[in-house]
Length: 446
Ligand code: GLY
Ligand code: MN
Ligand code: MN
Picture (cartoon, rainbow, N blue to C red):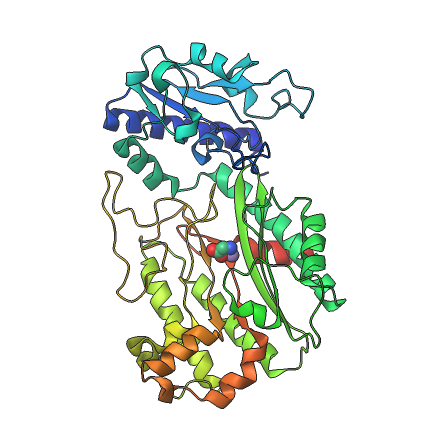
């Protein structure tokens, strides 16, 4: 049997959104869901705009990522309506005529000026749940100012963790695009390119400019890999070249991929062996993405596995259990094991206890974990263990009297390489996990 078409998948996705929105409105006591796509923002004392970022609530409904000033209106029992801004403008490219599988499911009204949207919104603004940012407000006294009712947002955020088959198909395409670009980035690294050069090679292969990518590329050579969110781009390559960490994604129809790989320049080196050990551990963590598993458990198990790697390589002198208990492992793995991913790289609802609110706490001592829910089919998460040699955190270990747990000569051996992170996007199913990122690498190799 052939796979369902994008048109069929989208139609089913829309049915799910309509069901969710209908319940969310009932929960909040509203009659209409109204979602502005967002507006352009300008730099202070300047007429230069920041890159436009579409309201994620808007692109959940329609694969439109570049349509500022538009609105989505949904009233239970009626078809969704798009109020679509196509300004008369000869300075900029105007959003084009809507095309694609979604068009036949939506009533489209074209407007030429942002304020014309108001006449196409429900008459009584007080009956609308308006989801967006304050700057999108329209009408006299900002009557149509986003009110983001908690009950509505809680319901939608909680359920957004469960991706529809359409969304998983879009996430798969985003991963494929990212992986293609990762392969080009590795080639640029092997050819001796600078961080800036590698970044350009990545964008070229992804077919996406920096502003279109779902997050700022992290392209780090040597010790820069120890800066978790390293977003500088040196114009010259260091000499000698030792290591390369790249955390870079891609977008497809508004959905994100988030992928990290680490490479040793000398593939016969001990650092390469450490990368291989982290890779093996990471695959085992990906295999834990199964229905009923507490995601925080994967995070804590990752600490044990990574501390095991450090011990194997002679960096730690204590057991993985002791490393976790005393907080020593946190100095080397100071971020969370991952997060939900979808319309947003760091997707919403990571701590949601239910669709009526409430929070699932993070384990003590692990403030950077972004997801504490129990995994269920349809959830898509990243698995991104890392090991880093970060001077600031290592100095703190010593200052806290935990220095004896570490062989500092071994730290000095690995410090020039910065660190390792390996990150995949993984779907939880009712059976074995589906690794979108590894699937894409495998397809590339075919
Ligand atoms: N690229 C950001 C992250 O991995 O969460
Ligand atoms: Mn991530
Ligand atoms: Mn990442």
